[in-house]
Image 1 (tube, rainbow, N blue to C red):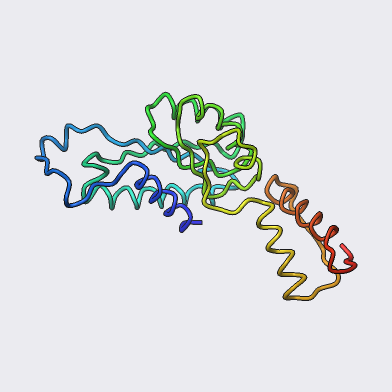
Image 2: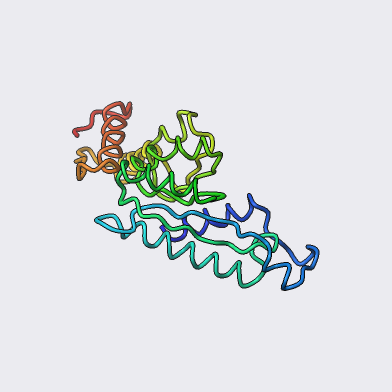
Length: 207
């Protein structure tokens, strides 16, 4: 998870064009006067899924601190806006509204697919890029409704396809139990896995 978050933050830096030693030198006074690049970090920072959201914040803090210790982005410091949505869609819309109104330049989040879907319309209207390290619902990217959304994790269908292929091709199993915890992620992944197994042409499988 932390690796995917670091990749997302690095991608943000590339999109915003990081400064380099060849950039024009600026005095300390000029650097202080430059407005910050605001990166919003939105996700489950409390509740059952905080174990996913809090590492996202910590990774963003780490990368921002390292960049700010050198030159920031084109001499502009990185400022984090941290919002807790609890992985709840109804809270996510409020968080997204606050982030957009707070002048964010990009969003790292959300963590859960339901919260992400609820917030994306607000980001789209505000012309904000959002990047999630963990929202896996296929439609978030495959529907084409939100071209401003990116993710650094494979979607449910891609994950399920890999798991099923491994079970059938490598493990050579004949009976497969598909279990989930009734959560959005678990249920979505399980449904894709079950459909791939049942449609598999490599012989009869008991699911």
